[in-house]
Image (cartoon, rainbow, N blue to C red; front, side, top):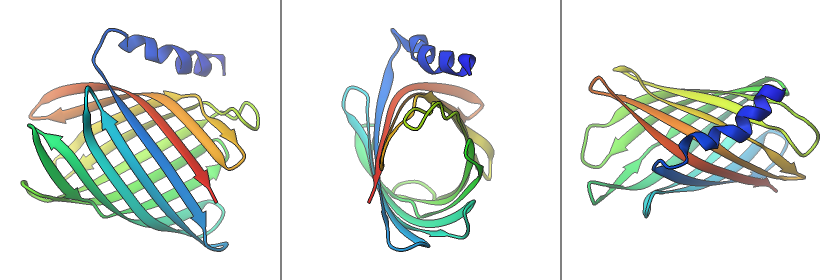
Length: 198
């Protein structure tokens, strides 16, 4: 436990003096009944300016206490080479939570791109959470991405998690590693994930 807390608070120190990005995510979930939930997620990403924005709208079905399945529509606007690029990305998420400390999200997504070929991609995101008390739960997660070319990206994220009733706040440090044309690029990200249920 002490090692996990040390990682949570010291990881951001690694990137001091380096160029970093800021990602801000808001998750909004509304329960329709015991089985169905609607979900919406706006996210913006900045470096020295706004570079990316997406909006997710979806619906989630609870199969049982451990398993949920959701269908989503995502629309993306991104600046690439000083050009605004639009992308549509429908996806299906499978959420599996065998216990209170471990969860897994599997995402199947189809990228419908404006200027390049469309692409299918699958993402696995296991998360380990250590619940210290009812309002504090630090977490660590990783998320490898795969396409027909194989492994193309990983996102490693660690941070404290705070829960206050139906509101949660997960600030964190993320290291994104991209593999393209036999080269590796790493991006340091300060990420704030906020959410609430109604």
